[in-house]
Image (tube, rainbow over all chains, first blue to last red; front, side):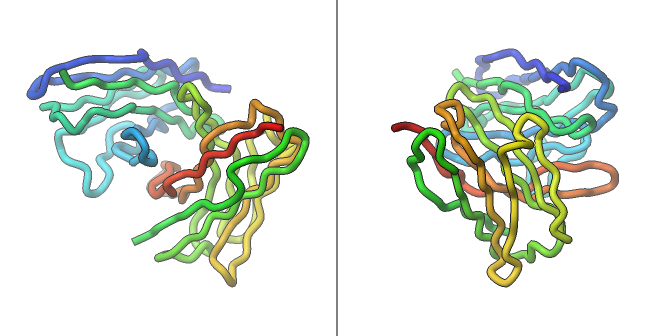
Length: 105
Length: 120
């Protein structure tokens, strides 16, 4: 299985720029996708194919990376961005990262 | 808009089968692919499998001996059956549309999820 590693938690203030990382145990090309999950809700697709913004998602969200290292950037962060952010790869079967919990101070 | 809704028992006994239904509105399941994903307590998420527009299936190898995904196109529903469950199958179960665009596969619409507890 391709293991995706994410840092467990981050805390930032509104208006700041935050980067959330996801590292794959082997190359996944650009087959990396990002989801936002707020408490009690289903995951919401933010970014597909490493850098493509899903329709309707604010341009504050962006993604980058290829191979094994990927980043989701939120700039500027808003209070309602409090959520857990998951990465997911579709290059080798389908696996998810463990999620990064983002707290807005 | 595409909407998905999971339904099924919230409590299943160990060694029994877990059966869930995903009802889809706003889009035909005879197009695209449709999957099941689960989220365990502690946040780990696992892809379980999917069924295609033609009815073919693909399963996570770790579940292959226990899982079955089927569908009823007349009701626009697809189903999950997981056999011989243990307490480790306690999770929130989601159904989702598995979308293909320009070389990328991803889940673009999700149901709200249904929590299933395996306990005697």
